[in-house]
Length: 277
Ligand code: SAM
Image 1 (cartoon, helix red, strand yellow):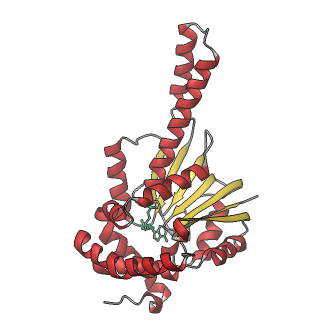
Image 2 (cartoon, helix red, strand yellow):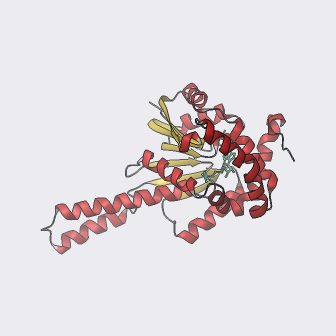
Image 3 (cartoon, protein in one colour):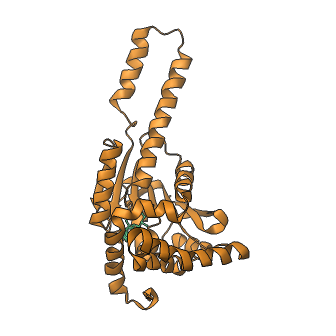
């Protein structure tokens, strides 16, 4: 049953990854919640807090899958907008109702303050599920979906303020190429943010995590999604991904500056960040 991804030739990796996500797309969200006990939600929330987007931010979310980062981005921008509106009203307590209503109307004209997110994922099935979810949850404005490869992004240079990739980069065949592409499409001053599984830094947690990963995850994959192999791939791909410092160096090699990382949950995942200056 061993997938042997280490021995898979590069040319085949992309195809295999495609098959994995094609096969798990419909169960992807349920699996995320059950395998991480919901903690992936917290990790994604933390990414958004670190991003702290300002009004008008143009975000590119690569390997955006079923939209988890994009929807959070829109929620964040919406709540910031409500906050601004409340502050505005507070600071003009003796305004007439006409003035107050004008203030509201101005905000209503630019519902997300001009912020937009483009979700780019290589997998048509994942994008399909994401689009359905967006419709169901009422995310209609400020987002668009593009099928595309992180290694060869279908966007012009210097186009985005922020680039995110969450649990995506380890699936890419040529990570260095994906990082160069991230650098290319970001504006000068733009920020790169990556949320990815990393290396656990505590020996006891590491033991437990190994047990859980190798013994439990494929079983859960089989029970919930009827797909042992895809989830075995998941575990293997996590083990093969470079540790914190090594990945940091790769981001620097792509040209990013001020590269830093922060471990979450004992290093089970890390957020790497860098700037194009
Ligand atoms: N970002 C989402 C999240 O955090 O829930 C989805 C992560 S999912 C584990 C990985 C995603 O990466 C899949 O949707 C897959 O199709 C996508 N992917 C894999 N290789 C890719 C590539 N070369 N370019 C773009 N997306 C890719």
